[in-house]
Length: 129
Image (cartoon, rainbow, N blue to C red; front, side, top):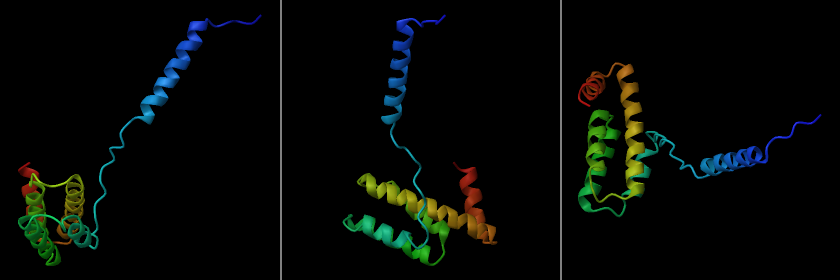
């Protein structure tokens, strides 16, 4: 004896399956940006901000000088200032955010290595968010 499922049940199953596939296919890809390494930051920032207004270029140059001098707290603060420029493109915002993530990693490594200014900056950031 074979049990027949109601026709509406199989249609409902197909509808739910199709809806699930459609929703998963249309889901935006909102992956977190990956940090730039210390070696990648200068080229990426210079390329992304090559056609920026002079004030923004100056900030980028100051950030890169601070990074080169291993002044990670200074570089991070300047990168924060850059991100507040309302005229930045999406690409510039993304590159700057990735640079900030990379600088944050450098700050953590410097702090773990005994850099007191990096440790103080991290503690300041934790308590003033």
